[in-house]
Length: 310
Image (cartoon, rainbow, N blue to C red; front, side):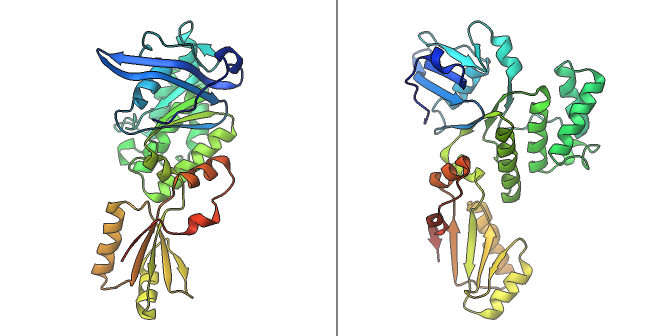
C-alpha cells in the first residue's frame, strides 16, 4: 500500500492538513491489517491511497470515516480539524463517502434521491430543493432528474452518487474506485468532476489500485494503422469518436486498453471485413497521473505506446 509518510508532529500539521494520522494500527485477532501507517493529506488536494486487494485500504477509510475504531497502539488521528477520539460526530459532519458500488436507489427518480439525502442532512424542504436543483444542474442531470434512477447509465449513476454525497457540503470526500465500470467518456467526465471539487477547496481521498488510478486519467487510446487507403477511409467513416491522421493512415480511438474494449474493436473490424495492419495500445502510467493531478500537463514522451499488438 502506498501512503504519504508523516515526519512533523501531528499537532503542527493539523491546521494545514485535512487528514493527519500517525501510527495507524488495526488487527483482527492475530492478523495485523494495518501496522503503523502515517498519513498527511493537505487540504484542497487529491490524495491517492494505492495498494492491491487485501492491503488494508478499506480499513484505513473505515477508520478515518468513523465506521470502525482504530486498533490499540494507534497514534493521534485528526480529520477535518477534529480529533477522532474526542469528536467523531464533527468528523461525520465534515466528510462524504462514496463507495465503489452506487448507493443510488433505482426505484425512485434522481431528484427524489437528492431530496432523500437532503432530508437525512436535516435540511429544510426549501433548502433541500435548492441544493438538489443546484447539484443536479452542476452534474448535468437536470434532463434525467424526473426519471427513475434505474434507467440511468453507469456514468449518470456515478455522477448522481457523488452529487448525493455533496448535499451536506463536505470538505473531505472519500471516493472508492470512482471510475469502476465506466466507459472512457464517463471516466473523462468523472475526472473533470474531481478536478472541479478540488478547485473549490474540497479534499478528495481516492482509494484503489494503481491500475484504477491510471484509468481516471484521460488519454488512453487504441491506434489503428492501415496501408490500404480504402480500408482506412471505411474505418474512419464507420467509427465514432475517432481522431484521424490522413498522412499516416492512422485512427486513434479513446479506450482504457481493457481486454473487453480491445475485443470489441477487433470484433467490429472482423464484422466490417476491415483489416488494420497494426493495432497499438496506449494506457496512461503513474507519471501521467502525476502530471494530471498537478495540472502540469502530460509529458510528450507519454505519447508513445506502452504496448503493441500485431
